[in-house]
Image 1 (tube, rainbow, N blue to C red):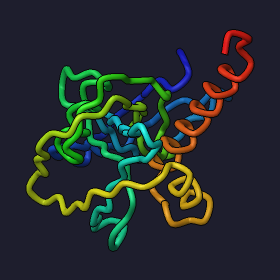
Image 2: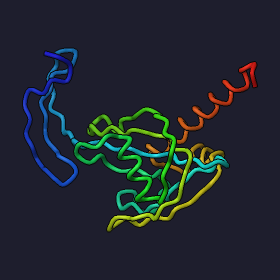
Image 3: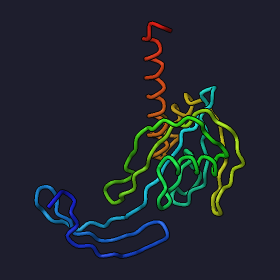
Length: 188
């Protein structure tokens, strides 16, 4: 038996997006436990950065957060869709943007204690404006700000969304590493 094998699964709820079940599993130490698990197809988020190093952030109303929060353009993977395709689609739909250059910023688990969702993060550059197409039920404002200000908002708690925090921090780290490589290159 491998780690995380499901011994028994009792479905509780099947929705349009998520599935909830009680799963009996054997842990690596041999103990068996029952866990309430939420299964989700996963998602992708885009850090859209323009030539002035301004980032596109969405101020979005979220019922679960009890109000407005700052987020990156993001959404769930459709069946058969790659994470990059999802990031491209969501950037166009929510922010009205297309990016020519994409850099993989890795992925994260949103809440691995109960939730199997993996969110894939992408940095999009070489931006072109498109018409946006918010879905029914999305209440979104599109904002641009310097990446440095967005990172300050991550530090001071203004930005509280997990995927947005990780995406912005990883984008900042990527840009710093690129700048360091250029400064170390004797041909510059």
